[in-house]
Length: 240
Image (tube, rainbow, N blue to C red):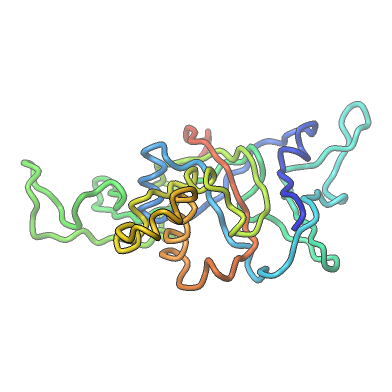
């Protein structure tokens, strides 16, 4: 497989267009990791793309313009693209480009007075004025249905790269928010297994996190993914 190329490598001399805002879904576990400051990367499968290598990140020439000096630069607001080794297939990253902002959709609830977030609740039941648990159960709503007005978390994209899932490094797995506690206890309690994973513990942990979210065999399928690095940021001006 060819060496990973990042968007920052390509765009370091380019002119950044005004940032756009895109939605992205996160599980409650991953929202907790972001809030703790343990997560600054996310990987998302490029659908339908499992068995191939990529040559480079490219900007579609039709999406380029000229600056005041006549130099060509990418119009980032129109989309980062990837050109793969086979054929002319070009895929657009649905999450935006470097400098764009992601608004996080997470599991939530609306009790008319305020919003609740499953990632920040210790219980599935409401509490009273004395913080005692009541019998009224919180009616959680799927993240896909979260409206913009309920969003509390915004992420600014710092870099985008394309790689196959299994190529993630132990360091990047740690930046994904994976914890050693994500590895099943029966594996950690096995002395031989524990020794085998000691050098790549976070990568092993990330595998279990990935499979929990994406299903059995999703790691072994080794899909090509968008590897997005981000930083928390303030609510964009003009956002609902």
